[in-house]
Amino acid sequence: MSEGQFGPCCQTGSALSKLNAAHAAGAGLTRRKKSALRRPSQPNQRALINTKMPSSKTDHDQPDGAVPARAPEAFSLRAAGPLRGDVSAPGDKSISHRALILGAMADGETTVTGLLEGDDVLRTAAAMRALGAHIERDGRGAGAVWRIAGAHAPVPGKPGALEKPLYFGNAGTGARLVMGAAAGRGIAASFDGDQSLRARPMDRIADPLALMGVQCRPLGEPDEKGGPLRLPCTVEPPEKLKAIDYTLPKPSAQIKSAILLAALGAEGETVIREPEPCRDHSERMLAAFGAKLSITTERSGRVIRLAGPQRVTACNTAVPGDPSSAAFPIAAALIVEGSDIVVRDVLVNPLRAGFYETLVEMGADISFENRREVSGEPIADIRARYSPRLKGVAAPASRSASMIDEYPILAIVAAFADGDTYMPGVQELRVKESDRIASVEAGLKANGVGVESGGDWMRVMGRGRTVAGGGRVSTHHDHRIAMSFLVMGLATQKPAAIDDAAMIATSFPTFFDLMAQLGAAGR
Ligand code: S3P
Image (cartoon, rainbow, N blue to C red; front, side):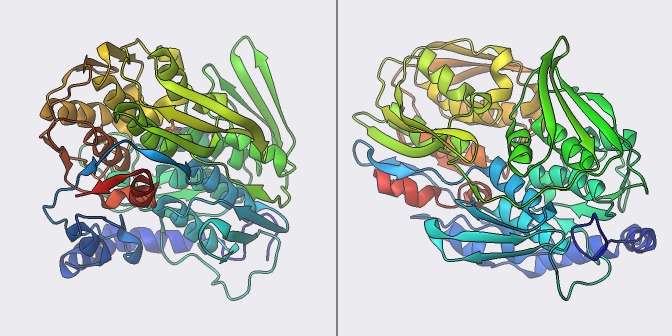
């Protein structure tokens, strides 16, 4: 195995040209379309028919990326009484992706406990395997231990070149971080995803990588409408990657992390300037894996410096509970009369805690107990009780990066508050798994809640405790839209329904089980 790669499967430029030619001829794309038509009843369709308790399975079994046809079903959750119980949040998605990627880049064996076994994260595991790492799981459920033999451990039986694009399904974080990691290890590869991921911009990663000397190009038919680079695309690093001094154009941890992972393989010191700070899991985990990096606060904001090339060393990692997933049962407890729940082991990193800060300002009855640290990250148990006197607030734009994934569920809580909740600085919601401003607005209006929005803001006119419900919400293949409106339906006067629950498995495969444990049933 050559040094500095994940494994022996470095893809050559000529292999990439062949892939490009195949796509240009439409071969790969046509195959995908045909297989979508041929596969009308995969397991995820079966789950869709079971409206009692969907298992939320996605297109795991469709490695070619076919997006299955969906049945016109409807799902809702109802609570027979107060929500009660003590549950653990599933593993944090951001940290799970990073543990797999860094484990695969490290010398030695990394073990990971508490890994989120959601579809998005399993896609990253598959990509890292395709890049040559050996990854296996011992045990099942909460006790499962993932073992990752990294770059410099022997990887038997791998082919000499990647034959297929790395397929990331719905996982934007996986695709964007692995683009940086592959570039950092000098591996040329191509990247693809499902319909939703193919619609998301990739130029935010391609631009800084281009400054490092990496060529990212569209694969297959060029986008007729022009616009930013999207998947499928190729990433071709140069022989020598250049260090850069880069100011993040937006507070995006995906951009920052892709650059940091690439910088591990660059010649010289890479400097990343963050005018507005965003989640810092990559910095924390790089330090835990033995990387040398410095973080200072300067006039330009937070500045991270990493001198390459550097190797990282295996590190046993415990993944804390995901605050973005915990937000759903916690919001449910606040709006369902008489509820009192505890969600254990939740990550409370200040750069992820904006939703909880906002809830406190709204008058929510939540408390943080048993604060402690796990694998270099702060965690706590969060207790949430029914809060009948929620009030609307203005959530400052400066807080948006620390709650970017929680706006859909915040909008639901806001619907049950007295007065308006104003959410400025949320333009990034337009390019998430769906246009979340539009999805939230349509869903709330369909259920009797007033909403106004502009390009980068949203205002929810709270209805107090009487939200009508009765509407059917289009989820647009977006897991957080699906869970948000299922939670809303727990407390509306008439049941509210969503059109699709399958995508929930991308981030929270145990959502329905956990909600059932608390007393909320599907119907
Ligand atoms: C993530 C960063 C955020 C977030 C996403 C996960 C990460 O995206 O929305 O769900 O793990 O780095 P941006 O970097 O685009 O803000």
